[in-house]
Image (cartoon, rainbow, N blue to C red; front, side, top):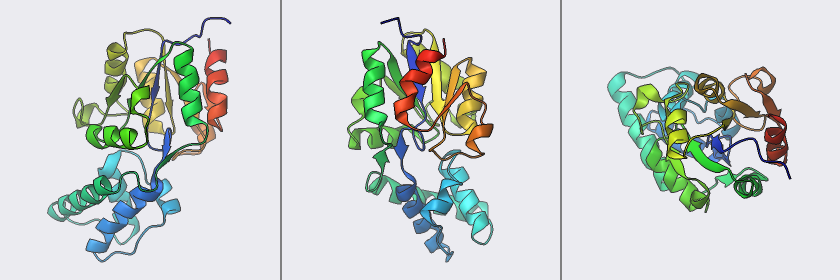
Length: 224
């Protein structure tokens, strides 16, 4: 078997490793209800995920009657986060084939890390709840280095690569936040079509687009 071309593989979390929009929708709808707004459906929320809780709640409020003032927004954001933390893995599951693909990458000698715009604490809690935390060397969230250095900035990717010992690396994600950060970091970029794409999957700036986790290892092997 020829040597695998990557030392490190970085992954976005929501919409890439895990299907989390049902739990996220419940949390958003909890906040919307406090404001007397109609709920969003989980499928509607798929198009609003990205940029963390702030971006998600802003888009949901705008879709359900308009933004609120800054003080009220902070109250609703905290209510959303409190609800989400309490129900973080009620309905969330890894995408089909995810665990098997991660295990194959580790067998091929890759070190894995998570780079997500979810804050670090909930990201670690979710991975542990799903029994996935042992697969990753490190986890970077939007608050690990500071909000201004979250994706689409490349900072967390570069920091994660350093934590993993350096080497050739790839970024796997589902949105322009991920692909832009990957490009800026100098990574090979693979996008997934089954996630929470913030533009049509075929328009994402990537070196390969996959439709199932079964395709990930062959796609990376081909991107030498």
